[in-house]
Length: 110
Image 1 (cartoon, rainbow, N blue to C red):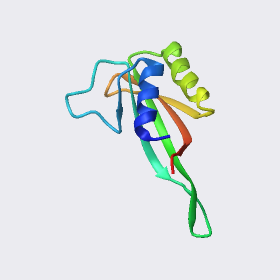
Image 2 (tube, rainbow, N blue to C red):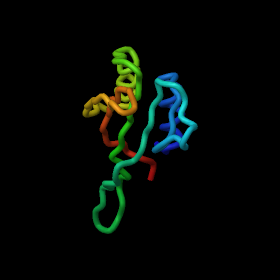
Image 3 (cartoon, one colour):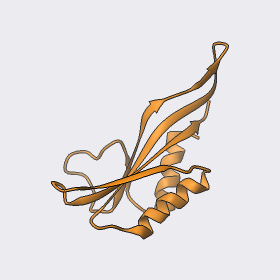
Image 4 (cartoon, rainbow, N blue to C red):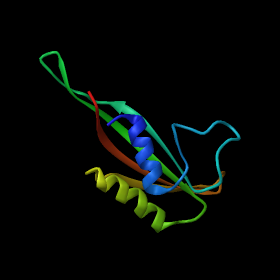
């Protein structure tokens, strides 16, 4: 899968605004929205060949209140790709918003 395909599927599956890595200052939409990004590469390499391109990724869901329906949409999107993410959450006091973080590995196109 390419990052551009991942973006389109995330946006279409959740119905939420989404952006890679961060919104431009002053351009973030109203809550809720998602941000996704690659944390690191961990390709499967043997005999000097790359067999699989694997990306450790995060999706961050930002909301103004706890929203289990939106969380279920993100989880359903990931489960549809065969991904069971690690999930954590926090409240960001200075921003007055909740953040749910989905951590997972995604195999990319070679």
